[in-house]
Image (cartoon, rainbow, N blue to C red; front, top):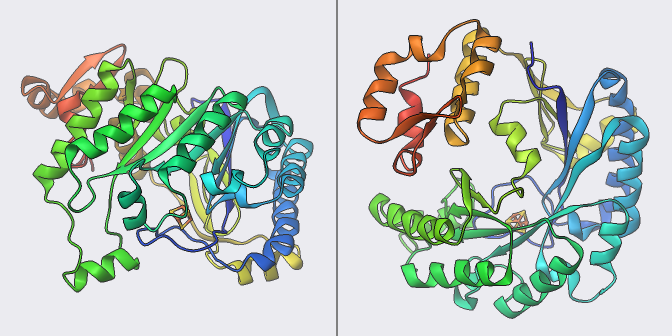
Length: 380
Ligand code: SF4
């Protein structure tokens, strides 16, 4: 049973000009295969549509990699295939992830993206301090990021900026300067993440050699509180552990992940969750292209979730965001959340980590910081 009627579509565009030192997303830097990939992606989207004829989608999210690396014609062709083959709501949120450097040479690209149907843009700003951008091995500098953000806001009222904080040797004030500037520019949605030293990244190699080390937990927490405080006092709603928005600018697509709604993904490495089944596409563009050339889908790791796994995932997603929706919990699992978890909820409410509010059990600001630890107490 799924309590949400509308689902989301995720499109993984696995290309970047080069790989940033901290990145562990699936991508390739050989841009010469973009043409072949685009036609295989459209084939995948069309081939899969027979499974979803009774489903309405109200969000489409192009992520990556760097979707803005593709030409407007390629992006328009992919969007057309989606709209031709699937039932997309008239008011659907249609987002594209992008990097500032993709808009410096061609002034027509931002309005063109809006004209072909995108109504939300997410910019990989990361920092507005040049030394920090260099450390992160980003291609843009702070001036470019500010200029592109200002221009993008002319065409996209619904704009999000990504920020990374808690860099080694970073000062609190410096992370604050980036956030202050984004607030001043009028950016309505900010996703702010701690720098993670993921395995299989250049950054992690530097850590193993003791060249660059992550901050300790209490320093990370200091950054988190500092940034959160700034955004809350500027009127942003802290609606997920790492996401802040002005009223009405929450990301509908990301809310699907956190509200445990159905979504389907296309492109290499894309994940899907649909009617209790979870799977991913192959994480290899050569294999992906070869399979689709023969009109074969590229699924792997197909798992039918057990009732206990579904409940765990529902709780895990809910506690990171707006909280456990009590009515939806009982509809989905036939149990009363507050009764079965009375010991845990009492303890966390008593210590100021959680509260019952608007039909949900949710973490407070203090609780968000310990979200992973608190979640463990509710898992089977
Ligand atoms: S631009 Fe984004 S997706 Fe591409 S390598 Fe850098 S962090 Fe990864």
